[in-house]
Image 1: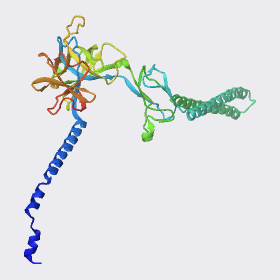
Image 2: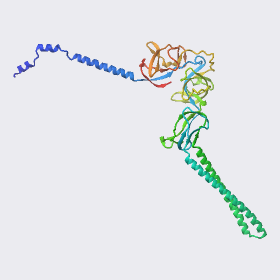
Image 3: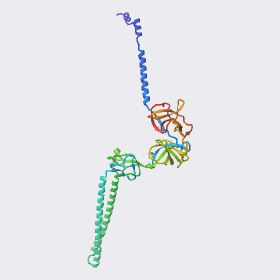
Image 4: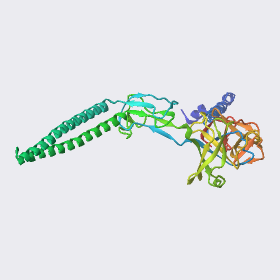
Length: 413
């Protein structure tokens, strides 16, 4: 076939080209694929944004106290601590046969908390007692021999004077009496040593019973029956170092970290008022015990010890608390408390030209429009409405935080 004929067969006729152009073509498929990809990407992005939680700092909104508007020179946060608490353990190593405590139990000083296996210590005590009895019996025997030897020596001395016995016999009798006296003295010391060993065995035996060192409440049960307990942590993770933790609830107080820039406002014995995060409407009168003469370089704070003037079963260790330091003791019956709640000033953000706060509920941030009071209370601002006492608010919310976004609390102020 010639080249001209080949080219003629490869040529597309006009009517065939028109029929081809009238078909659906590839562009609609391309456009559809692009739209589908964008839709899938948007859905994935929405899912990721919805599931990912933004890490935020939070604080608890508190109700203002009678001292908020008058007399409060400073407010700070802290925690309830116990000045008297102990992890109770045995002074010997042994296996627990009884544990008589549970968390929340009230115990009295000297009450039995647990018992250890005492078979070995009981045998050692019985052996020591037997040795003591044997030593004391030897003392009695030697005492009788000494009495006889002394009588014989006196009799021999009388007979020597009359010439009935020789001086040698008299000297032997006196020597026997002196020797018996020395043996008696040595045996008495052995008996005393045996008695000391009995006392030591009795002490070790008594150590198999663990007693409460003071009156308090059990806050932690650390061991179970069958476990080995030791005060020396022998055996690694298979040995318990304590039976439980007991706290003297009468020794509860507040440890507050005060910014060193404001520590000059706090004085020893000055009145104060405490509000627990768990009970924001409960005002507890308090006073400053002491200012600890040491600063935390990392946090730039100074620790202040605050005593609670009222004791209550609702107050437990490690509770969060806000303390107001007062110029004078608050008079609750006449003081005028402002309405609303107090939140950190950094919790108030601007959204769409309005002041707003983000309240965290069920790990979700909910935006609420607020109108803060013009009066400030230290680093706190009063919100007359929109937020309730005890609710959690976001501190220093970032611009990316939106209403309904999931959040994760990294810490609470």
